[in-house]
Image (spheres, rainbow, N blue to C red):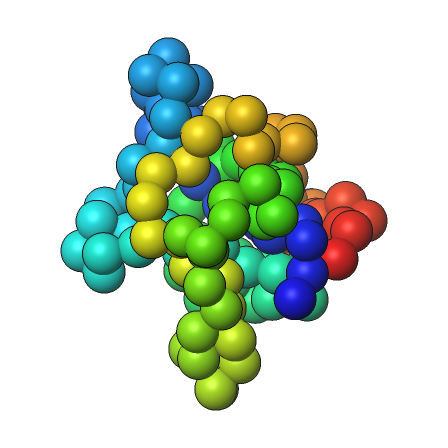
Length: 115
């Protein structure tokens, strides 16, 4: 499985997580009982499907290996295996955070992502 996974998060929620020193998830994560992540191959579709109307978003790269057994790859959209974290995300596993920008046509612009 990929060692780097990605989370899309709105800036205020992430700022609160940074202040707290841990990320417990967005409302959808709380409702589902785990924190949703995407691989490099999945994150663009995740952005379009779940964040199309949202602004002020961040893209967060996570060292999946640092999460241990709490990270599980489970079938989701179209049967693809998505990374789910059963626990909180420690800031020590965060590799980088950057704004998720849009182009002139409103499409998300992703940096080159490592798998």
